[in-house]
Image 1 (cartoon, rainbow, N blue to C red):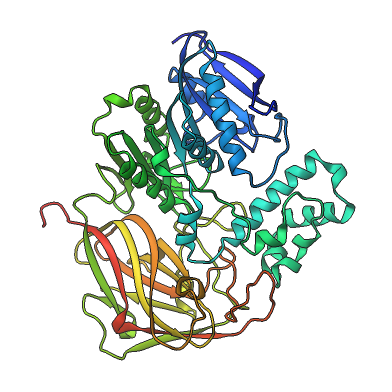
Image 2: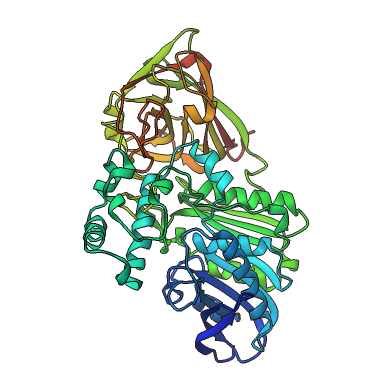
Length: 545
């Protein structure tokens, strides 16, 4: 490999004469280039998915650019400016392709925000784009479907505080003393912002001068995630996520959408036992999945660079590499879910069972949920920016709460591999105009530990399109995707609760949003067992049909 050269503060002109700045590593001769665009500081990119150093060592040039109005780049920054990001990505791709150290092929890459803007740029169809390497992404419609009308409160508040802190650092003259004091206090302890009722009247309202409508953001009126048209992504795509990533299912659907839109192009998906973080180690939450589970051990950066070095030679054309938790092994498939997966249906039964036969007709279970005493979010697919910790964390204490219903299978006589989609079809009736159904698939171990595997939520007023009532109504809750071996002696569990706070915003049960209302009422939720079911994609064990 030739020696690498570094260029700092390289000016990259946009179509409106605004200059963005980047750092460049190149080999002194034309090579394909990987372009990273980030609002979080171009010299702070450290995701284990793919780093600039990986690209350089792999024989690629690397370009790391601050997005508009951020760090070294000129222009006006706005927290939500997806159309502008798409145009800037297009312009930067074409600028990179014209440089003497680039051979004309450019790959857009990034994680989370960086991955989203990579897809947005690709949808603009820049002629020199050769591929997209995106990790941990979502779109507005997929997020809305996954959240079922709820809001990821802790994610929104934590991101807002992070961006406000950077705004204060760069524009101290725009903030008054109360804003500075409030922000410092919330960075140390965000709980007052999360627990305030109404949310819009809490301490976040004292952040004056910040360039975003905070009440509108808390009310869900600000589109925090954009849309792109999968058919417009006319290049090979390599996407990466983790089973405990808050965007896990959305990222997997980005792969599925790309395959459906362009089956003639090569596509790759890698899913490990990771959360929505930069480091992707072999341990997450309370579990160690073995040294082969880390992104480094799985050579995720090298896989991507080999794929983009010659995607036309890729075989098979579509490939999924997924980590089967419980077995703690990497597996491969040519589709998601794997073609061998078969649907299995389990039914909640009286006395907390979960079996193959429905409960007797008319059997009802239920709980009373008080929004002022919500079920705390714990583990699973939560964001790490606040005080929550993602991953497999024991939920055993939650099973003792009177507002959590739990249904468990008998101990398994042989392993069961749940690999693919998970959903719950629940028939419920409620005593108030609104309620949330927070549903989890869990792995109950022989020692009593209860670990989250997949989860979903449905806000009844949203999914029904009307106020809820005491009429039994069937509601589908999408729990996304999973790859979990339930070992011999383990039990599958279905948990149903009324909240997961502060990961999700509180449903006050009145029909009024928590952003503008403080009135909360206890809601009684009845679950009609005979008309409820849990559906799983299951792989046959080797040697069995």
